[in-house]
Length: 163
Image 1 (cartoon, rainbow, N blue to C red):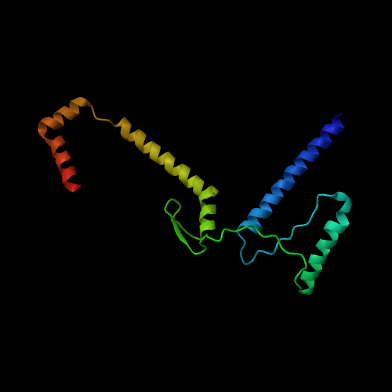
Image 2: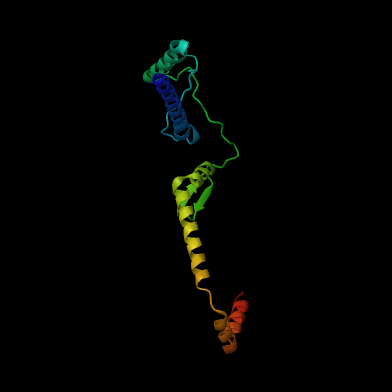
């Protein structure tokens, strides 16, 4: 019984690791490919009994063609791209004090850990400022004194004039 639960746990961890690897490859090489990113080739790996003919041989053929300087017969995997996205658009993130060029890069920046951290930090500071202002409320007696002296109404007039 212990062996069976161990095998099941190992299978589950292996599947999780494979998903994590696939996600990493997709994010690193396919979502935002740069000039230094090599092409990525997909091979059919679902049937283990056909491993040599569906995985090993095609993989070796791709490697041989790269070594010989030829283009492989297999086509690289491409992520569907949005033709309407602007690769030269200019975005300024005031929060992070960064300039981002490209719509896809901007979308990635908005989801990035550093941007979300800055956003959380800003919200915390803003909520602290509101709390401080609320705690420094003026007593009604003080308002009455200001009104008698004319300074409360004077500030209102100055504010209206500046608008």
